[in-house]
Image (cartoon, rainbow, N blue to C red):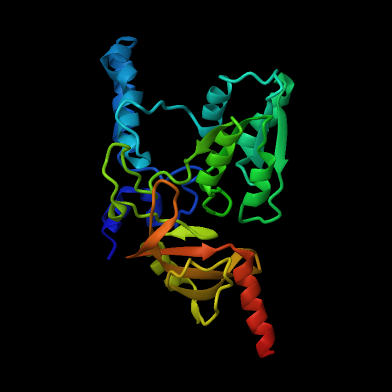
Length: 314
């Protein structure tokens, strides 16, 4: 049994639902009630004095707790309301009025980040939105080709929010730096899944395990077991196409039908696979662990392979 399951009871919503949208708003921990009351009590009882009695340092303290998740040190985290505002803070350091004024983005980037950078055209920025041609994966070759000597900024997510596809960030950084451009790497979707090491730690691949989805929606073991109880999952003997396989990682597929609206049902494919061990410098796969992850597949190639096999039997 996964040792993390002992924490499940700390999130009230998990008692009555399977929560798959933590990327937008995390399930609320039970302890929030007491923490919010303590904050309100400080405000009510201490008023403006509460700032110098803890509020000023609160953001720093929370940042220090987050730091190990992304390989940062204590004191290196600056907290802001959301990723888009952070992008705005960083972008405010750059001048788009010169000849180097291009911003290169993928059309798979988070919508509000796209909105923000498109708005920078009023300040002189040229925005090149690179079409992926694939709802799951970034077209890396096409994206790299768009980064040239006129490029100033390349905002890119390490993990794409729509599909959980991991972008080859190192290739993008290398290309941008060769032409003098800056990369703003958004690791929000990856934080807590890549066990990043502090930059001063010795290199040890045994410490670097990446738990990620290969074109799907991640679920933990408890959610998978609950899904097994709620719908009938049938094992599938389908060989995945090379583009959808887990880089030689072992996997098992199951399919089932879920209701999505009144009298409307949809077939889903669930994959169980091993977690890879990764190189945190370039996120390449070094090997496979005995730890397991589960996902509801969203990669069209998987469903195409399923339909192809079904048609062959007809």
